[in-house]
Length: 278
Image 1 (cartoon, one colour):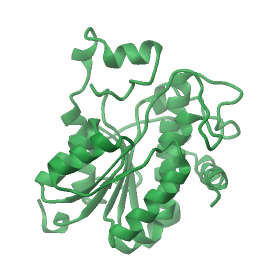
Image 2 (cartoon, helix red, strand yellow):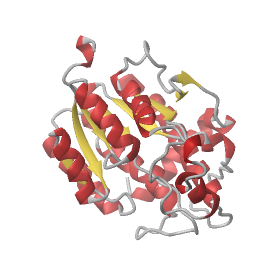
Image 3 (spheres, helix red, strand yellow):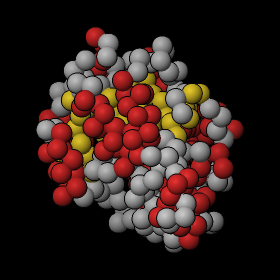
């Protein structure tokens, strides 16, 4: 561990299980202060108690809980060096949240957008890194329509997930454009097809892939996915990884060509801000 990496505060959402919990364990072992954020209070507290770290509870399907989380983090964290937007999921049939948005889009992108923008001053003060857990689904399954972010005209679980993961990358690159001169840096990554409870709310082939004993040997271990998040959190932007980059297995990788469109990235930011009332 380098001197620059010592004693930083790292906030990880979706850290009550899966790669978020694995990354938290690895980062604490490396001497970092990790703030555990999860949806389920019992599991979130269990991870936090195991590590001796603070925790907060928020369901990203409810934006008022995200707003409350931002206030709690502002009160408890004078400094945030890394914000890892790791919470997310994939669903079966189209669902609409209490806020009126398609659930996949809200839980994977919109809630993270809201949390990140509400914490902007903390991130600027620290010259923080913002890390988005994206997916190769952005390239393989997305059918991105900036005028149909709620998938009202066309929906499938796969395309909704691919679109949300592409939104993560577009958001990453727009953070660099809008906040880069203020010292905030960002990167997105694909953790691997992880053997976790990630798709427990999905149906069809997604649920089979993630829960079947027949396919489990094909999945990437949780600790490996967690290590890929931890690598970005511990790394030095501009030296270990490229600002605004997208990574697979700790290497720069290709994604959807849409991710390189600055007009779409700017429009996504503006539409997201309208949706959450910013």
